Length: 213
Image (cartoon, rainbow, N blue to C red; front, side, top):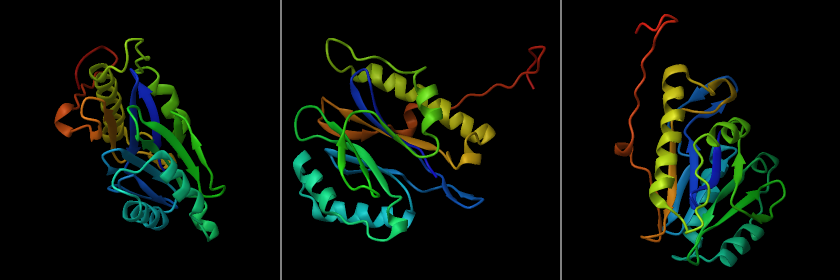
């Protein structure tokens, strides 16, 4: 299972995903769930790895260099998931063919594109919705604020990665293995990864008397 989510913080589109792959009781790290296919197109997935990889490759190969919202919707509407185990595939993400990206959701069991900013797929969805709100920065009436959005995103990534490294939080439901995120830069008009050098993890363990362990 997995966790992939789209949301806005301070008006800035965000795409977040984990790295864990689960098969029965087996858990493996190291598989990206989100990707920037174009400067203006970012996609995340959940479902069976082989089918997700196949559809992402096809989208990458068959869409134009600057795809429009209409082009993406038409491609997804015409894609046939086929076999039943492909129908567990879900895609969410952002596409920008104007000044402000639009979020989307596509479900292989009912292949129709739905539009909106807030999507969360995978077993970690409910937990993410709860703790992400503690970092959320509301939309600014003066427009998107990239600095404030990055502060929220760095705090969120630190929280998630720290819990994953120290306690393997979420592994029992197949979520974790590290987290990464993309955000939309209005100034550069492209999706950008949050670089590792932008945040680090600090953990101090104390006993009940306040002494460091």
